[in-house]
Image 1 (tube, rainbow, N blue to C red):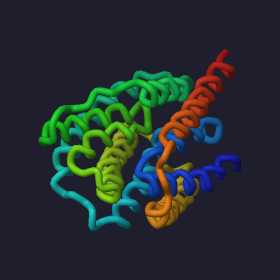
Image 2: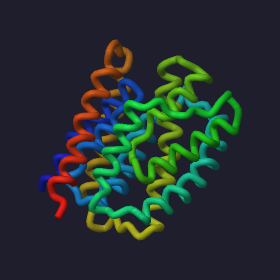
Image 3: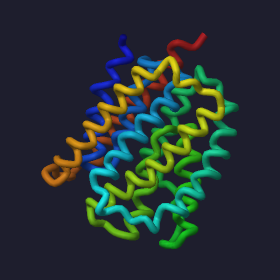
Image 4: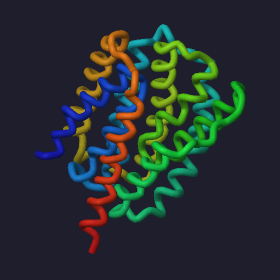
Length: 240
């Protein structure tokens, strides 16, 4: 029954993302090891985050810029294929440690960003967002710098981040299904996490205008790093 601790966690992390536009998926991912088996972490995370991001986009639908989506989706399909190939080669017992290392790298190292504001930049964003997400899980902050070239208005940025993340998580979920992951044993947990995520998005959307963002990113990076180190330590400690 410990896995059902993920219900309040899904609510809180979705509310966090709804309020500030990012961070919820990373935080959820770092808390899943130990509550569900390693092979289920990334598929359940993808589908839960699909619900969280899609509901956030729906709640702010007036801010959606539909011109961004075709190129992101096209790049995402290629990214899912490439990332799926890498995922097949991983030893799943070590997957939480791999994710932990990637989270630390994504949190603290400068990341390459496609230049400009054209369709190629959006397609490249979709490619590496989805491809890297197949093995790292939570990569939402990767696209913030790209979308910020189009608008820095907070509602626009939060909602359109949710749109491109919805595309990425949908493609990831489909890829895991094609690779043989069965949802059957997880339907009850997944349904609860989806409901908690949608409710969290609703709450976070309404809190967005009231929450200051001063110093948030620094403290969030510290918290995520501690949890990523926990993921690595759990695997190393239990290694034969």
